[in-house]
Every structure is written in C-alpha cells, then in structure tokens.
Image (cartoon, rainbow, N blue to C red; front, side, top):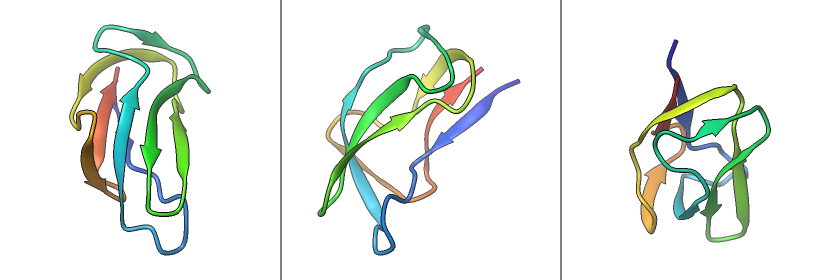
Length: 77
C-alpha cells in the first residue's frame, strides 16, 4: 500500500521549504527513521525521515525545488 510523504511543518510560521538534497532515489528500500531528504527554510535546515518501511516509488519534488507545507513530495510503497 502506497504512503505519501508530505512536506512537514518545522516551525509555526513555515509555509514552504526547499528540498536541498535527496538521500534516496526511486527504487531504494527505506526503513522507519531513515533520512529521505534535507529541507531548507528561511530559518533552518532539517532532515525529513521515513515514517514507514518500504520502497521509494516516486519523488515528486526535485532538488532545489520548493514545496508548500503538506504538499506530497514522495511516495513510498
């Protein structure tokens, strides 16, 4: 069953973030807690971790691209 990975909200005023680096690629197997990507906001840089075990099926937002909070950035199956 596919699980969506959404852009998290790292701070009260955060409305969007920029994906600076993906640590995984389509087809990679991930476990809960594995870092998926790094997100930069106007105030901080943080890692997004997997919340599920599975295989990365899609990356919907590329490096150096912005995503709004709760926008789907990847799919894990």
